[in-house]
Length: 134
Figure (spheres, rainbow, N blue to C red):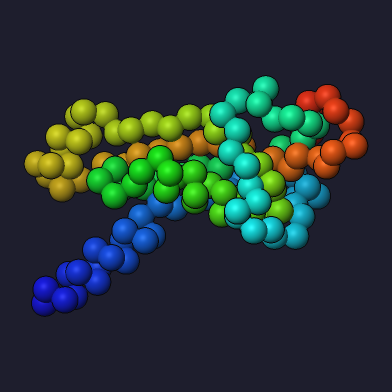
């Protein structure tokens, strides 16, 4: 029984973050790339060149097992599947104190959440001003 419990914990630790992508424009989807090629940007002003907005990303993970780095990794993986080479993070939100107390006392869900925009940053040599496609 203890072995089974450890397997469940290990599986959850690996898959404790999920990210869904709401594609904004199907024509902007490109072939998948390596998630290692996806750059995280904290503001739109950090993006060095023109870019297209590909999808809205919503991430969610159990607060106890999910770090911000795991959230970023999940966002990068989802963006890479769409051929997006960048992610502009809109925000990360930890669960409220009330949610944490309810989780501890009642076993309810207590989730960390994050939002971002998956983008395709145009290659060097393309228009150097930052714009977005709608």
